Amino acid sequence: MKETRISLSSGELAIQEWGNSSKPTMMCLHGWLDNGATFHRLAPLLAQDYHLLIVDLPGHGLSEPLAEGAHYYIWQNIEVLFELLTVKHLASVHLLGHSMGGVVASIFAGTFADKVSSLVLLDSLGPMTSTPEQTPQQLAKAIIDSQRTPSSLRTFAAIDDALNARKKSSPGMTDNALRPIVERNLKSIEGGYCWRTDARLRHTSKVRLGDDQVAAFLAAITAPVLVVLAEQGIVPRAWVEQRMGSIQRAQLVYLPGHHHFHAEPAPAESINGHIKQFLSLDS
Image (tube, rainbow, N blue to C red; front, side, top):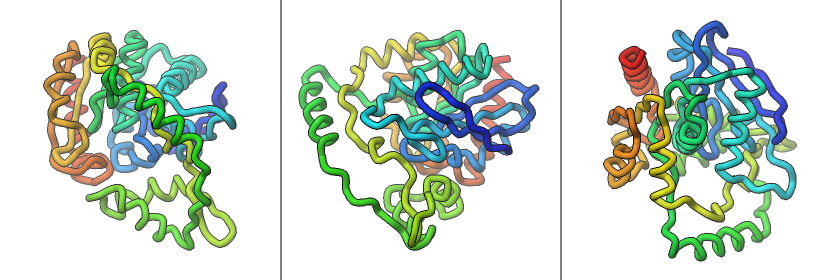
């Protein structure tokens, strides 16, 4: 694995590259407040068959935050991916996304269908939605939230203190699964460590898509789609039948585990096996 950086109009992106560049390219996108280290178990397995580009999305991990005054919208990540493919001279890629990364990947695949050879979603099946009636309240909440005075910078005397803090919002994750993510999201300061993740990522979304709009993005995906959901994950069961029905070429698999199941050894092996089988059947 090698760490690389690439300059885009939104700022510098940190990318972990795995595998031989002569192999098909698979781009991997992490979840909200995570980073590319979320794939530390899966990457060496996938790299046997693919050239992996594991991206730290803007404001996450080792990538630069957006400029002062900017806001984080899901659309910006679509633009980032489009520009990244252009700069890397990639006509198309295999896309894999976990959680928010899966949301970005699925919207990108519906927007630029010709640029996606296959799509793998890990405990992800499209974005959260709002009804038209909920939209005014959603906008008001987001604006009020963004105007709040930022809280003081949280510091940790040791990495284990940060690990324990993060475990509270990541139920079920083992220390070995979580530690690489935590370490990549920390920066050293006088007296200890603090999160390097951009605090603006926690702001509420100003506007959400509606169910019909999400269905339209999913229906526009022409690549084969493998959806791997965790049995103790976060995707509502009500979404599954509704959204899977919108995708033209989709396969659904449930595996035991929590939302970050791909970061644990046994589920990572199983996920890799399903990806191998899925893509070999479609080739």
